[in-house]
Length: 495
Ligand SMILES: Cc1cc2nc3c(=O)[nH]c(=O)nc-3n(C[C@H](O)[C@H](O)[C@H](O)COP(=O)(O)OP(=O)(O)OC[C@H]3O[C@@H](n4cnc5c(N)ncnc54)[C@H](O)[C@@H]3O)c2cc1C
Image 1 (cartoon, rainbow, N blue to C red):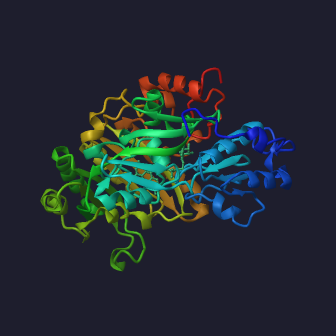
Image 2: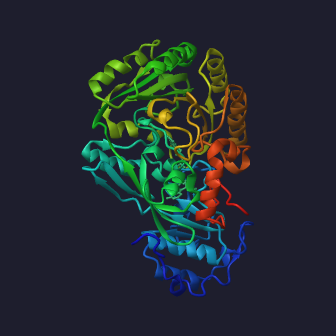
Image 3: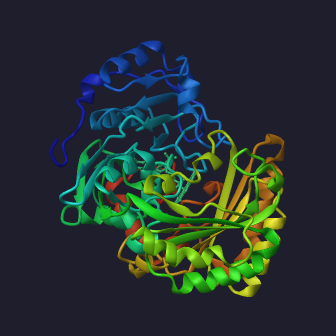
């Protein structure tokens, strides 16, 4: 497929389809409940991937998202297999004025990967990963997960920075930044994105790299899913693993203050090979943890050293000696195991509401507030997480990529995680109130942990700063009608 190819002969394929559609979604004109079966049948015949409608028995499984809080019923799900399928879905949505959701890994906390009444461009099956070890590059489909990517790249002892839970999609994560165990050594996921293939709102395939349509690449490095459907992500690879040293130390909650104090001193001078998180919470009542400590407050220090594991043991040792640990699971392990350390803590279908704020410091007053707010969490599954930010990710200038400012020394993640739908309000209220308290010590939001964006007071022009106007121009160029608006939306000019 060449640059700018129009991917579909949709005159032929969608001829006359969807004429009698009537959307329930207020943002759309019709209701897809009324798409007739003949239309669906004809669409199915013309698409390589499957098309799932509410009448199909797998509909409920396929529409469901990781966050159990979200319950949206799309009119049709286009399970795409290739760029032509994606373009066909785009064309169909435009013909019928249907809202479009793009699903990468389906792990967006706010559930933006599904539409109520519109269509879903579902890339789950476009998850192939191809490594060019010689050139230290990997080509990954828009539906690949971190697990898919790590599995293939580690066959060659290579990796690119991703997040810390392996079921997460690379797409949503990269398009809004991407922080994990390699951030200090190699930067954000989006900093390592060196090229991409994108089906844009006009159904064309656009290649972007640092030398070709480079403004689009600039926008994909942090500007979210605003500019089109990314069908292929190309990343730079680095030598990592196969074994790395990982620290995983739980200290009792009453030592939080001293531990966070020592942790601050440690991370201030740690080499770039160290990326870490301090997690404040309560030991879950789960078999993975000794029963006698279930429900106990803790602070866990989790870190990875991305170089030689023997050196890593030495460098990470202080993290294991700040106080008397309740549990120390630190060890040399495979990089892929480190990438999956938290997987079981985030099962599909649980209820989640996450907020975040950048902190100016981790001084004693901030530490006290973190401690106080953690203790107030209504659910034992919730945590307050300190992510020290440094090294490579902070050396990129704010205007070099769309991501924007990245010079705060810490990100605070506020994770409300719970199971009882009757407790939704309590948990959301806690996360918001925790955020309000912490606003005295920082500002901004990390767009991968933004709450349920539309309901928040988060303002994109503030988040993107000087980059915002450039993003508006790019949006106006690639999506002037704002087809891709079910996201942290950058509105095109005139809309
Ligand atoms: C358990 C868990 C752990 C996490 N850990 C981390 C972490 O360690 N570090 C971190 O930085 N973030 C982390 N996150 C946040 C994560 O980066 C976001 O939730 C991200 O949106 C997930 O990407 P996805 O592809 O799974 O999302 P989806 O829900 O599939 O998509 C989210 C949005 O991204 C856009 N999008 C998705 N695919 C495409 C595409 N192919 N083309 C264009 N736009 C697209 C769309 O706007 C879509 O609405 C975590 C999230 C979860 C649930």
